[in-house]
Structures are given as structure tokens and as C-alpha cells.
Length: 340
Image 1 (cartoon, rainbow, N blue to C red):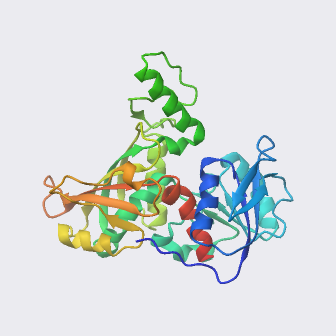
Image 2: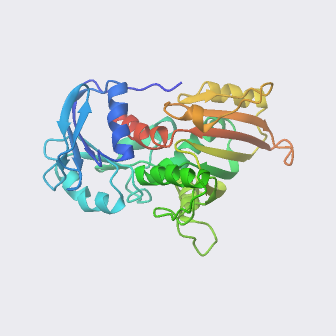
């Protein structure tokens, strides 16, 4: 089960992108864990400034973000897109504030820690004012892989994702709803946010394809996993797919170990003891991790734990579901803030 370590003294916190899907989850997570807040600023673009939001029973007016917004702030939680993060990073750090960024802007920079607290919290101390939140699929996958890798080093990961609309924010979630409704009613639907009709459909993740045939989302999983684990020798192949689910990603994982694979019972025990993981592995009732059960909870659900019959002695298969807006984004960032 997920456990949080709270700072001893109240902090001044700013949330950039407060009115977005992840921004609202930042607020919710801070409330749920009783994170000690001295003062909170809710920041947005000019378009959303002036909106009223609630935090801990108090009505707060959203402010338009500017270069002076971070004076006197200890921690800034950003989910406003890469370009905004890059634009404001210097203003944040020059104010003596630590930026925890949910975009891809800084993830692969050598001097920026890329952190999943349950995996590599020790990297947080090496920050120079910026800490990056990994890609949602990377986080959720590693919550299932790392407990096994700690005891039995992994040589190779082959993974396929089933990614929810929440990864694209409110607009994509709404497009899924509208597209599904149109399909049910037999009406034509012209997508605006995604390249294809989303209702009752699935398609390759809507990021550009590189020269190697992998899209950007897939390569994020490869490069980020190697950086987080400090191991460029782990071979990783990913296939990332959008599926018509509102929130919570699912990931199929095939592992090959350097030495022998853990037994199914050993793997289940290692995962069961790992903070932030719940086992959902009921073969008798064919009950395994599902996005509908992972939505809205902090823990990642892991199941379908079985030997890889194509790779006797070396291979293991499993399946994980995790809330993309929580552990895949807002919760992970707030956990980093807790360790700070």
C-alpha cells in the first residue's frame, strides 16, 4: 500500500496549470494526504485566470502566471506543458523555489533528477532546482518491474501499453465521450484532438514516429527507464496504444532476467511488500487489474503474474493498471515534494 512521508514544516506551494486535469489532481492529492501548506498559489494562463477553486475548504482565485509568481514560494508543481515549463524555469529557480515538472521538458537532461520515489528517491538530493516527473507509462510500469528487479536483475523488458484518454487531458477525455456518443447514435464524428475517431477504437499512440519505427511515447519508456534505474544495459521494447478508456493506463509486461526468474509465489510476495502496489491476481475468478478499479486510487494494481512459457527459467509475465492522473502524474510529483 502507498505510504507518504510528510514534511515537518508547512510549505509555500504554487501549482502551475491548476485548472487542467493534472493540476486539479495536484490539489486533490495535497488535500488527501494533509500536506502541510502555509500558503498556496493556483496559477494558470490568462484564459483561466479569475476562476474560483477550492483548497481545504477555502475558495482561492486562480492567478495569471507571470515571472514574479514564484517569489516566496518553496515548491512549484508544474503541469502546463513543455514550452511553459521551459519559459518559466529560470524564474522559478532564481526565486529559490524548486520546480517539480510533469512535462518532458527536462527529463533527459543529465543534471535533472528523473524520479519515481519508490524507485530512486535518493536522486532527489542531487537536484539543482529542477526535478522531473517521468512519463506516466514509465512510472506505472516501473511500479511493477522494480520490486522484482531489486532482487532479480532484469535483462530485457518487452511491454505494450493500453493508454487512457486522461493522458491527453480534459479535451481528449471529452473527445472520447463525444465520439462514443456519436458512434452509439450512428452519427458522423470528426475528431479534433486526435487523428482518429476514438469511440470503440484503438490506435498507435498519437506521437510522431521516429526513424527506428518507434513513436515518441515508446522511446520515452525506453530512455526514461534506463535513466531512472541507472542502467543503460537493460534492453527495452515498447508498443504504446491509445484505448477508449477515460483514465488509468494498463500495461502488459514481459520480463527476462539475467539469472533465473523468480517463482510466481516469490514475485507475488515481492510485489505485495512494495509500497504503492496492490496485488489483484485471482485466477479462479479471472479477476485481474482493470482500469475501472485503478481509477481514483493511489496504488498500482498488479496481476496476471505467470511464467513465460516461451522462455523457461528466465521469463515472467505480468499486467499492471495505474491511474494516469495520480501515480502517473500528480501523486508522483507530490511524493517528490514530500521527500524534499
